[in-house]
Length: 114
Image 1 (cartoon, rainbow, N blue to C red):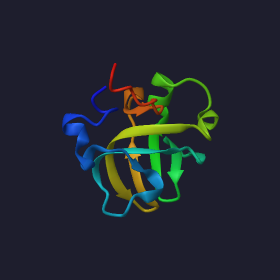
Image 2: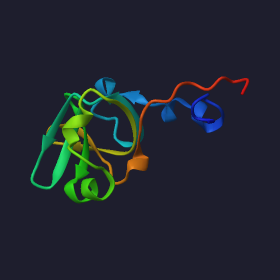
Image 3: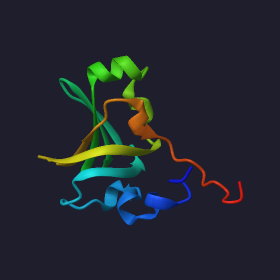
Image 4: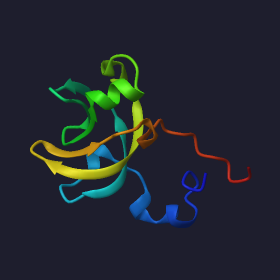
């Protein structure tokens, strides 16, 4: 709740979700990133969910079978906020997601009076 209304530590700009399309090469480290799944790719060991041309979420096939159901292609067009460590890769930046708690759909802002 505090994060959704920018209270306390969540008011600091470092902890605000950044748009995937606006990430720069040096935006590495622990971050919150938001964006829409544009494309899904399947590699030998991982699913790759592209949120921009230069940022992808990586989910291993093993973790996908454990925690998610169905085909990853169904996520195309859906909006997410993800949290985790951004690392550089050959194709830009990526974030490895190991558990569904690291991904959340966008929430409507809470009314401060609640």
